[in-house]
Length: 326
Ligand code: GA4
Image 1 (cartoon, rainbow, N blue to C red):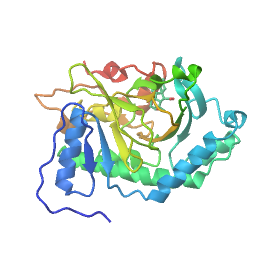
Image 2 (image 1 turned 45 degrees about the vertical axis):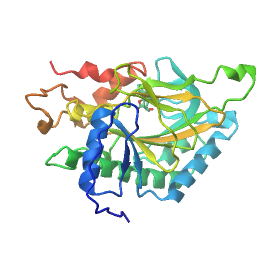
Image 3 (image 1 turned 90 degrees about the horizontal axis):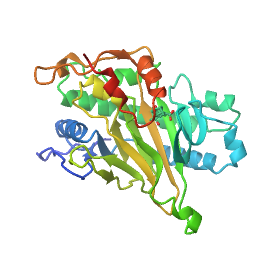
């Protein structure tokens, strides 16, 4: 149950290197305003007091760790990632690399994780994944509806509808970053890039990790564009605005550039849900976001067109710029 606070408290604006924290148990109007502020300034925030049960998160983490603990030859049977499946070091089809191994799954409940895993002959506890995906998808939709309300949109399901769609092209990614040991060879791994700078292409991403640091966001609000380390919080979810949401809000919300560094003595595992629209869905700025002060910035495109473009480019490409309205 969500406990609603009755104290009249002001919503907050964020400047510099403070990570916005959204407490979902606070009054709805405050939460709406704070989410909008955080998405305009950073495209990123941390959510606490969400309704996802601890056991759903714990079971997901356990099956993830169990998978990565398998012998390499067994994991490789689920790969190479193309784009789905097990991958090690290589990211995407255009030569990007990182200091990690991962498992990328489709998160559409119509196309359960089980299918890809069965094809690739590996065991992966699909009901645990489905339960996790169901809960995280619900949280993503709740956040998108709060955002739409905060932006004053008449249709408050404009964004969430695309993710609730049975054909939504959503993904689940498990990233496993190596730990750092005190020997000479591993020494160079500290401060090495686990997953390079990029923005997420979809509408919204919800990330959680174990208690190990590594995630950094590029702060758009400092002139130098500083990398801001995100302190780990295994009980929280971290939310990223994706490229598609930047396009739909006509650039008012910003899709955050982020990266993961290998900076620790411990192994880091993150689980990321990418909420994406159906392939045939049109992505266009919602009319209320186009004003004289903010003229139309992006042309309309289908998610399938955007995906084709993103897979033809490098990880760090500022791909949305190619869809500018002329
Ligand atoms: C970045 C966000 C997600 O991890 C991802 C990545 C995808 C992949 O690993 O297959 C991409 C990358 C991501 C954007 C550009 C392309 C595609 C690798 C790459 C070089 C699963 C996604 O949707 O886009």
